[in-house]
Length: 198
Ligand SMILES: [Zn+2]
Ligand SMILES: [Zn+2]
Image (tube, rainbow, N blue to C red; front, side):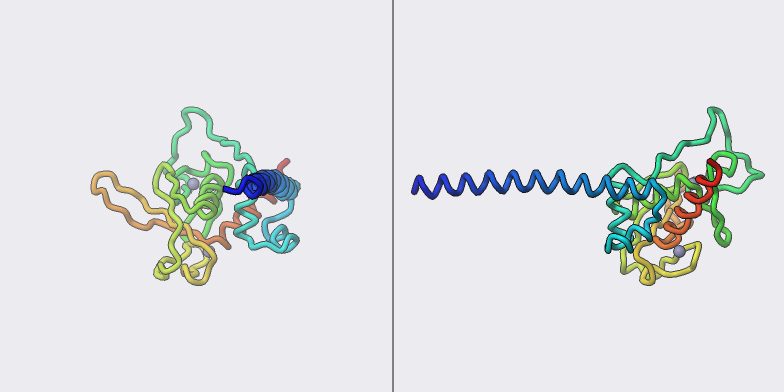
């Protein structure tokens, strides 16, 4: 082996490693800057338009940088679901147990499930609630529809379905679904209402 060429190859390798480290640092800085904007009130839609990125990409960046907001559970120890109250279709918690419950036609979603569904869309990984498993519906699953706006999987960027697991029968049935557009809308409603309250 030519020693001179080997030295040159090693130096090139070092430079590449340095450059890759720089990319990671700059990426983390960028993600933090995006999240900071979001925490200062810019909606995901505004961020996407302002930065020339897709809504989904902005969402992923915000999540990777530490998430949209820290949800503080208002549930107090020993609080139980009240059958007389409206409940989140996705997790079963009643309106007294969640910060915010958003209603669709015969369907409800709470702030925690909105955040969770967003994570499922961002990562593609399934997440469990007390009641159901949330999964991102694959694009060919055109028979699945958003419970809130009625659009099917093909008409939206992403769709999260919640399948209730009945323990006795070990069967799953699609209980409800929410699309990326409705999720973004819910997220904005909650942001507005929470900032109004503070
Ligand atoms: Zn819920
Ligand atoms: Zn929808």
